[in-house]
Image (cartoon, rainbow, N blue to C red; front, side, top):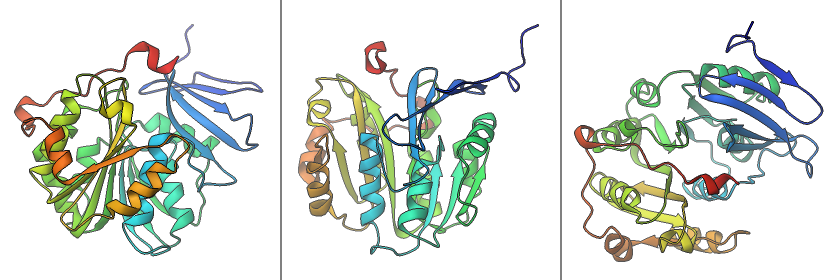
Length: 288
């Protein structure tokens, strides 16, 4: 008899494998770090966690989100953060490690994945992290008005961001949850001709006064599929320091903002619920 979705589980010296709501989850040990693991869903890398060093961010896009977390407030200041999309809670762990006494809400729809991560990669019991296993937009709606200093969106289903998390109506909910002057950061993925990315920038520009985009230059030139981190606020963003940090990463990134970012959109129009579509699926070669 086939094992049920909730009970199928394998463990060996190399990995923990379990079927979760979103597909086949694998926790693969990092050979270079004794208590570090990479989470994959259906073969697509989702998160990397070092239990001994939660301030270590291995993935390129997570380092860029880490820069945003570092720069949205003075160093060490506790924050109220909402994470839409949990994965292995990498960024929530990072906030807890770098900004003690922060209060965080993680919204991760995949309840089976949450159980797997809690069991195999437990959170620090002293961290103020609450996890809700509901849809990202539903969970965001439960955040009190003006509660969050930062909202981070990193939601993928089948390696695509769901359509209902790409619209102006979604960003209206983000703005409602943010305190005045708070920041929004989103992990976006696109490839040539970058129509989705341009549309997301136009959508954010319709709701926020200040924007910045961090990405590999080859992605921005439409040469390959990859991640871009969009940052938005109504207050000026720390673009100079963000530029310096992105440029010094192991895989250097470029920051676009102001007129250059407006020009990059190429006349794209804001996305609304009625016409929203999911982000494009990555080509198979991305995960090889």
